[in-house]
Amino acid sequence: MQCKKEDYTEGSIFHFYNRTEKGKLLFQSDEDYFYFLRKFKSNITKYPCEVYAYCLMPNHFHFCLKQISSRPAYGIFNAAMMSYTLHYNYKYNCRGHLLEKRLQSKKLKDDGYLIQLCRYIHYNPVKAGLVEDIESWKYSNYLEIIGKRNGTMFSAHLSRTYPEEFENYAGNILTYQKYLTGSEFTELLMDGE
Image (cartoon, rainbow, N blue to C red):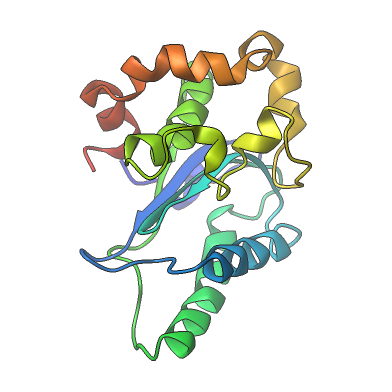
């Protein structure tokens, strides 16, 4: 179910996602991915949040964020997507919107799904057949989580809160892969997307 305005309270955790209209690409080059990430990151101070997990895919994106102020976390996407759409349309000589629907969001009501959601988000490129090894996909914060890249779009709060889950995060994703690809979990996270 889509979140309501009153759901956006300080301390709440959300799964944000969206995709392009059928057949369109959201990101066509490395520059596109990094442009979007720069715009997203530049708006974190305006819409304070902790980034637990993200993954940018050629035609969609996923973010797991914790809102840490009274300013609704969805604002960061409004600002980043407005700038990115202008960039994209100018660069590729296009017009109009890029995304199929307005921003999709789901509030996590149970911390039990938080780690599962992070795994789901990071496993996306493998599930889509874009890479065989999660570490090969550079458009997520997976490498920060496993300590192989020193990026700033990852909240260490998560690994401190759930140390046993993150001690062997890479191995846990591989053994958890069967559950992640199940339709039951996908429906839970994506409302049947």
